[in-house]
Image 1 (cartoon, rainbow over the protein chains, first blue to last red):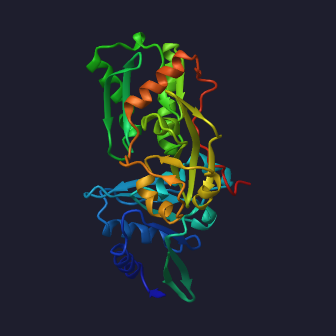
Image 2 (cartoon, each protein chain N blue to C red; image 1 turned 180 degrees about the vertical axis):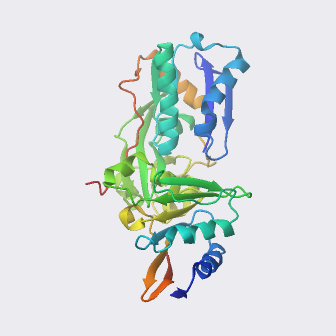
Image 3 (tube, each protein chain N blue to C red; image 1 turned 90 degrees about the vertical axis):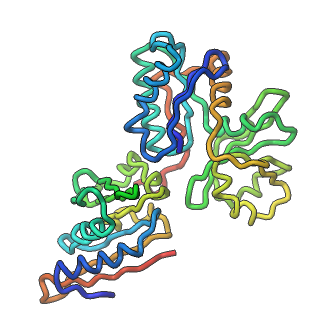
Length: 141
Length: 213
């Protein structure tokens, strides 16, 4: 568990985490609205040197970025998912079992569809510290 | 994953254009069709049918392939010939004296499979297409059987760990289906009148969607 006291510190933590990631990794993000999932992912993608700046895929569901080395990053946001039947038209396994890296916001909405081998990142607020966040990163094998 | 377009006259391959880099289906498939027809100097109205490798396989790849084929079939008013991908894998190994089990990785330790038997030069499917856990392979294989499929390389260790003396693997493991086998099977189906139209053609997804409310 790490404590970040500012958005800049969260960026640093995301940057360190980016060095751990390899092709075919899946990262599930958990945290309430405003807890900084997209902020963390923006910094993560910057560290991975994606050609595009990461933006929230709340409306598009999936954003695609790629690095100069040809690594694809798939950024998902399932906040708007209302029923699991909608997932049928996404072909999620094509992404989860491919060579790219999948970053998944609101992963709790699709947790039963995620491969067991994945990273989990939990972001939560710190009481009386508006910009503070507790960040827990777990690797599941 | 191969994104490719082939053309045959009767069962003879006339031309092919294929690309084996990721994520090109959506951007390039229609262009590949156009380019290939240019290379072999055949115009769209000269086509008699459109064949498609019907899956199972990449969900997105199948959707894109089917969208293009259905669009063309509609505008050219010609039939569609759907060839299950597992049939192609079984066929390309050539006639065998033992049964053949063709499989594709369905992820999460599951496989899609179909079982086949050769009678002279005819390949007959003797099972439905099914989805099982890889450990159940030993339960469905009753006699010495040849396993085929592009994912055998990936699944080799897991299959070996089953320690079944009834499983035979091909001498050479290939990662992509052979285009000549696809063309021959498509032509056979065409001649047998096994045709589909835009209403009744759809990909073989096979995976039951678990957890849907």
